[in-house]
Image (tube, rainbow, N blue to C red; front, side, top):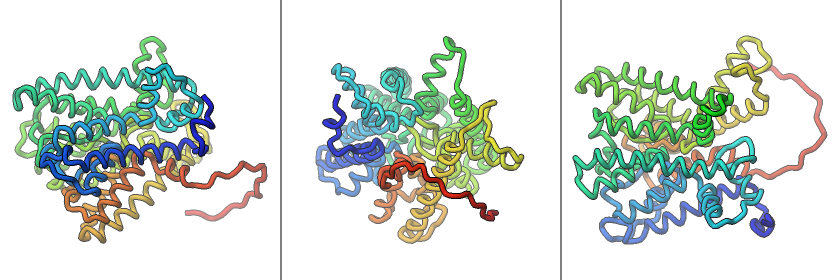
Length: 445
């Protein structure tokens, strides 16, 4: 394929991603505005439709109208399609259909897919897309059956099928959308092991990153795991364990007090998993202790792993920063993980991602504190939830002013694509130069 013909404007991969995601969001918003999309059969205002479409494509889950009661079955199906497109990436979806049609995937498309899936290498990227789709269909299908069987006892047939499919897709893509009504998410299933464990398993599988999942699948044959996969698994495990223990400790005599022991354990585990990426909740987030809400903010900011359906600064970024601080405190010049040195440019990238994220979160939190009534913790919680594409809320989302909605829309968009991708898309590209200036030291700290 001639890349010049395919991309007449010679857009860079980050620019294609930004414009592509924006186009999908706009198309989704226009469809959701139609009377057929709402349960009442009336037109939906553009800002509400745009907010919902952005939340779906960016797999966030923040909503200004209740998904289960406001939108018709058609509207819910549109949201589900947007979630799937957003979770896997529109270029991955397009690539899969190109493969089905027998079309050759050019280098430009491979570079865009590499950027979309946050992979280090272009080689094998099309094989990865094939594997991702097969894994996605099998995983979502399996758990859709389990959830449908469970929902049958509460909602009967055929509604249980739609609920099972919707929540399986939403959970795997770490979207957090639900159809149970009244903004209550999964609070009615706080002590239900089938729903709780099914949803958390889907969230974890979707949040590990597709490359990591493929390595785990091939491990019995290769008997080898990359440093990336080892780091992802270790950090994910520790975050879930520490998050669950701290949540249980902080809320044991508070919001969990009326639950049986098994319910307390399930609720603590569920919130530790969902708080980093997904946005489902089995307890009322607005009634948690302030310390617990701040714990969730930290988990949301860290987010999922690279190449996954989740957002945040990513588990590997968090780990790399921590290991860098540890190395500096020990007087080491090299950053080492599992007996391997990490190149300095990756440390710089991790630092850049984190600083851009802090700048974005700080700016939007300041704005929301002004426009939404001055509740700083609620504004910070909402902003980090949007940036981490999580979807948890202390109840502020439905009450957002128009300016607040626009701010959260932009934050969700930036969180899904990543602050560096946005920076690369809008920054002026410069040619590399061989000129290097003299080195000079400055005082820091």
